[in-house]
Image (cartoon, rainbow, N blue to C red; front, top):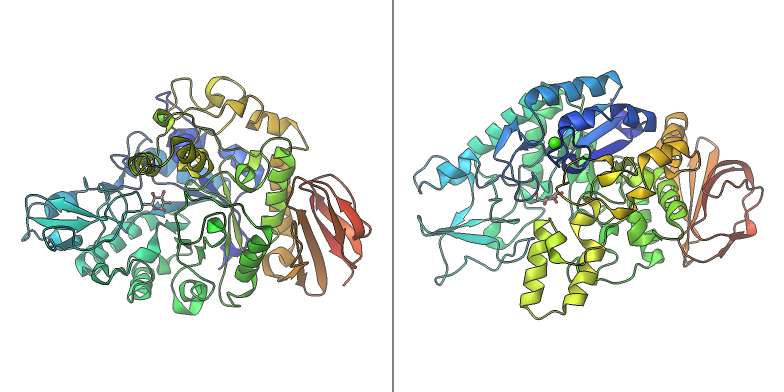
Length: 539
Ligand code: GLC
Ligand code: CA
């Protein structure tokens, strides 16, 4: 039990991982062809982005059949093969569970649209117009109102995301039962668990404009646990943008029988202007980053569990975001790896992070693929924003940054496809690619591999106490881990400039260093830009 506390998870964005039949779209056989690579990296679990049948308005997060595979990605047999082939390498498959909404092309919604008396009507959230317009001023995450008018019935339906993603009505018990049956179908295939898309929305109360943490949220999750995955030895992780450290145990205290852990996003918002949107940029303050991550290390309590991540398919690449993807690309990529993987919690690696993949610059909106990005562009242009400012936001934060093809080789399209890829490969694949990484013992890849091995060998990483050191230092993020009389110190200089470290503790062994140094004292030493290391110290 709790095997997932010792695990490292690798996130695959199926569309962009590997195309096996040269239609320009990544697919399941493509993933199978790289399982040996993932085994070499050492990961225990793959979180597989949605591969279900979908019209693809939001790249598969708009599902039209939960129990069918999108032919673009392959067949159900391919998926069974993936599960089996992964299992042979001791890798589990965690499926993406998207049950806050379906596609508007899902059979339930097609039925629901037939009229107010249709038995499926109440599977979704419908409201009468108010004063001839939208029921209230709730907004969609992808721009515009969260309500779409349905001519036929004269009512609006709710969509917190695109209008092709109508929100399910979790008040409806029959709908909930169907979701649990669907989950059991997947569990019976021997999957390793679920990543639950925007799960903190399912208890929403639209009439009170309560979008997250609704009053019945935890009842629904408990019911879901009891009726589906609670009977299987699997892991579950909730995507909860709203979660605070106080919420974490509500989801993940084992006694409550809900989830294994949640993704928290407090650090992800630190380079946004408070109260504005993700597009309104502000420089990251390292002290804020230290405070936020430390809060999650220390305040969630003994009966709760963290997940650890820097980036995913919705966020920019970490080296480009808070590191230096130019002169110090390798050093900063390794720094982020060391800093995160030695914290308490289950680490997640987003595909390509392990070779230090970077953001991709857009100069024309026709190069964008992501619905959120495209909508924001038109929205802001329409409301008078300067185009250059829009591109600055978009190049910093567009979800397309992380969705460019996985960079396997220096050949055309990065070895992802021989056809036109659905989204162009980052031109830097000529140098940043897996083939190069595997040939270079000093590559980012081997830092990740080593960190994963360290986790397997050292219970301190999984269970040790965490204490922040040097809380007021402006660029150095340093912390201590302590377990059964053993102590480690982790140090990272998050800056393009040198810094001076002054710690009194005495190292007895260097565990890992991105500058290949060994350390025998930490008092008054000079740190290079993005230098990061971990040492065992006298305790
Ligand atoms: C989650 C997904 C994101 C998707 C949204 C709606 O945030 O990670 O990609 O667009 O939910 O399903
Ligand atoms: Ca393909």
